[in-house]
Length: 161
Image 1: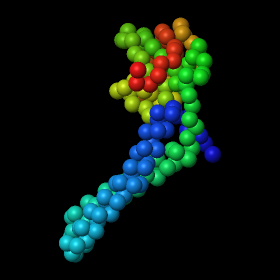
Image 2 (image 1 turned 135 degrees about the vertical axis):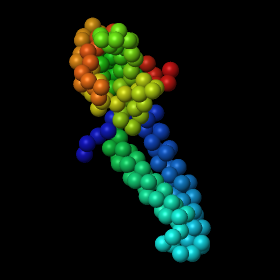
Image 3 (image 1 turned 90 degrees about the vertical axis):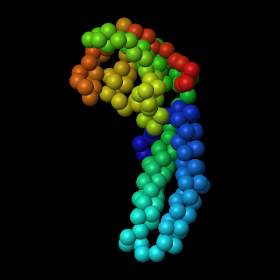
Image 4 (image 1 turned 60 degrees about the vertical axis):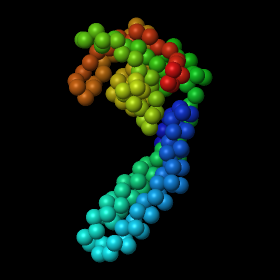
């Protein structure tokens, strides 16, 4: 079975959402469906169809989260060396074209959030960076084209700090 690396925070986040969907959201949607059914004719009952669609989306999300939990490989990045870029490393890179300095932490797919500087270990940039050290130049095929970066700094920093 393919494993899905994630931090303890990422694992806690998805298990919390999973429990919420199973224990709160599922019951709330079932109640919405029951209430909508009381309005009669299901063929033209917009409330019923909206509730059924909401239920379908929720069940898909539930299945996805259950899949992640079943494959979870919780990793504590604080125990890993960060001389070379690896899972959990925070890396400061210099975009050699724009001269912008960017900082990212490499995390599991379920916890990635580019706006917060968290990129998935599966992302094109993270794959290009893995195993590199400070001073290395890397080429990354990104959605907006191929970019060249210089690795300025590699270190460990707890997520959210």
